[in-house]
Amino acid sequence: MTVVIARHALPTGPAAEEFAGRVEAHLSKGIGRLEQSTEAIRSTFGTALMTLRARSIIDPRSAAVETWESAVTAMQVGSAVFAVSTVNEGRVECRIDRKLRSIPATGPRSFADAGTWLSAFWLAVICRDQERLTQLSEIPLEQLRSPEGSYDEYIYHWVDTLQTWWLRRPGLADKLIATIEASDPAVARIAPQDLLQAVLYPPINLFYHYVRNDRDGFAPALADALKLHKTYWTLNEDRAADIDGSIALGPLAIACLAYDADFPLDIESDYLPKHLLQRTWLGEFPT
Image (cartoon, rainbow, N blue to C red; front, side):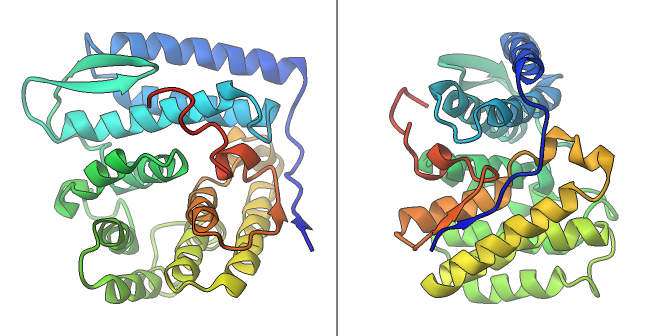
């Protein structure tokens, strides 16, 4: 039996399409400036994520190739953030928006941190880009640390867990347990509790079911993750109108792993755009 989890109401129609068009135009300008200056690469990544979310509102099943392209572009810019910040001099070649671009290296930047890394990693998983997953996983954990007080310690355990899993390093089980323990609300103190429990923790729980090959438990955990996502993004009017709630990026990424491993996923939700989940557009153009 298929479980349907409806996305909360978001503005649609001509206004939403006009907004998506404006964001896409802004993103195009930002990308065009990267070869001259990388000062705006952080904001360009934010705009790329916003473009994906705007596209997902007007194309909730990602049935149009433009939505796939927005996901790919967001992945490319997110990966470029780390490609240029892990090199101190010279230029770095990055494919972004169907073009190879020679972008100046920046050296370490404060925004190239664990939080940004997770978003970039989720996008690479969704786009099934193994090369970028490897590049992201090879970044030393210490380079992703922010000043004390910026993040709860669990986020570094989480990054370490994902890097260990992708690179098939030893100690995955211990690192995942450390992540789960450190993300307990009784331990984590920096992230707001509702954000931690409804948005940040569910991908960890889903990954736990995935790596244990828990084919019976994964779909119920995914349904719970989407319900929590919906609860968080509908708590008040401001959140309900926030474009960030249009897709559940972390759960979508882990669901993509499960889908590719032939887990039974009898769940339909616009929080998980169907054709991103099912990699319908994979191979449509070089990424």
